[in-house]
Length: 246
Image (cartoon, rainbow, N blue to C red; front, side, top):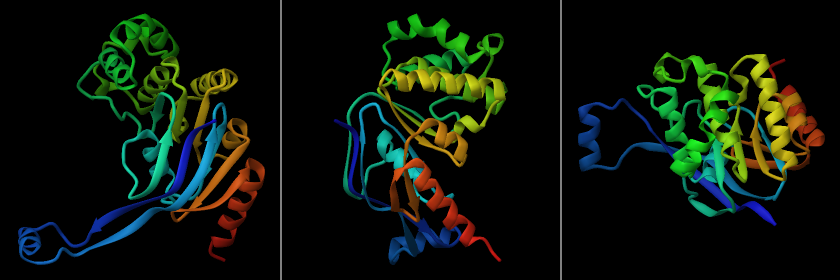
């Protein structure tokens, strides 16, 4: 049974050109706006089955993060349909859903609520989350005093301990020390063994091969290839080499 399904999904964003001066706003009131658009995704279709780990590969700006944002429900498609079955936890932009003036503990509770955990369940998991994160000495300090690595530790710990059905990860594991990255890999291995689903974006080919058996290659918003992770990476990396200046 598919837990994620994209059916002919397209997403377009608008770029406004020109400086945002007073005269620009006046021209908008009395005349047509000058803008250009770009297609972040173009007629993308795929299915991800329950318990599957699926990688998304592609160059910067290819549409990978847009695909994850659509899956998480943060944005809506302009065309097509996105179907997601199950509770989703998303690790997209580092610190998303966190507030810099709140303490780590307060952000933990806030982020758990955003993931759909009840106050009671959050209280039960609190010590477990803090212990996994390894930032107990700083848990009552404001988040603005945290390094990027500490923010990632807290965000990942909340997401993995919340036990979602589907976990979305966009490159954030590249932040942090080697020891915690290994801890994350072990937690993700246990997550996959439990039959949960993982949608994984990374520029690291070894990480993609470790986490996933299947991959999608996205290029300029279009789905170029869907198949075995080694075959997809070979095709993607081969195209990347060909595009390099001679």
